[in-house]
Structure formats: C-alpha cells, structure tokens
Length: 203
Image 1 (cartoon, rainbow, N blue to C red):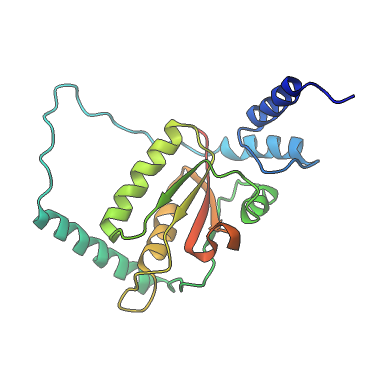
Image 2 (image 1 turned 90 degrees about the horizontal axis):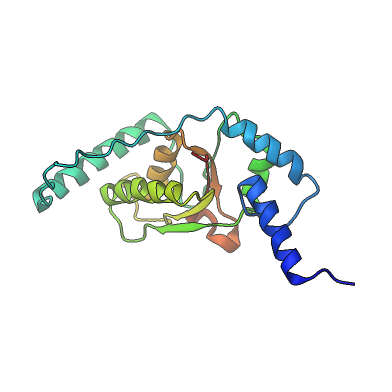
C-alpha cells in the first residue's frame, strides 16, 4: 500500500530542512553529508553589512564620467590580476573549494547534484557592472537563505590578452569572499564552462 501523498511531501520537506540544501536525488550518505556540512560552515565568518543611517541623504545618481572611471579602474585591476596569475581561457574549468568543505560535498557540486535556487546572468555587463551585480546578487541570495546558485558569465568578451573578462573576474571575486564555500564550472547541461555553480555558507 502506497503512503498518502501528504506524508511523502512532509517527509521530503523534513529531509531538505535537515540538511539546509535541496538536492536532486537522495543518497545513502546524506546523513553523513549533513554533519559534514554543518562542521564545514561553522568555521566560516559571515560578512557584516552596515546599514545606512536613517536620516542619510540619498546618494546622487552616478554620472557617465563616473561610470567610465569605474570601468577603467576595473579593467586596470583585471589587467593586474592577469599579470600575477595565468588567466583562465574560455574552455577552462574554474574551480575552488574552501579547505573546511568536505570533498564529498564538493564532488556533488561538481556533478550538479545540488538544486540551483537562483541565477545571475551577466551577459552584456561590463566588468564594473558585473562586480556590482554580483555583490547585490549574493546579498539577495543570503536574504532568501539560498544555498546553491548559478552565475552565467559566458565565454566573452575577451581582454587584450584574449582571456574572457567576466569569467576571470568572477573567479577572482568569488575566491575573496568568506561566504563562498566552493564553486565549479557547471556541467554541460547547466551551462558548462560559461557558468559557475556556487555553494554558499549559511548565515
């Protein structure tokens, strides 16, 4: 006799709430993964966001000149980063794992077994715009308690060296954040080397 649908829904909801993440399929090692994940995120410090004063005056809208200056600074910083390390090519796999994240969970991220809860598409964005969009996207992801998100950076445009700008920019920026547990280029069916799957620490 099959269990009532309501019991199945309740059981699935309990399983997802226990681990903090929704996965595409059940695995016998889920209980171990839950303990490993809680141990991993315990050492990650959250980013403190400072709210503006209540009586603060609204900031003036940026002028085109300021946008051009920001973009020039972003390109200068990007060029410096490329000089200090070998840039990723369009077909290269981008990958990062925080030292406290268990390898088992990282392997599941690489295989695309975590459900993607939100997505940021950076097609058409400049380097300065992409940095700002990423910052706001991650703030929103934490506000909604998302655990796994996808960032679509594409495979262009190219820098003077021929390296994809946004792909390398995302790789550098995400590595610097202490709320990012891991990221890896998506499987071919989820965007391949033109997208990243990102595992976030819970606040």
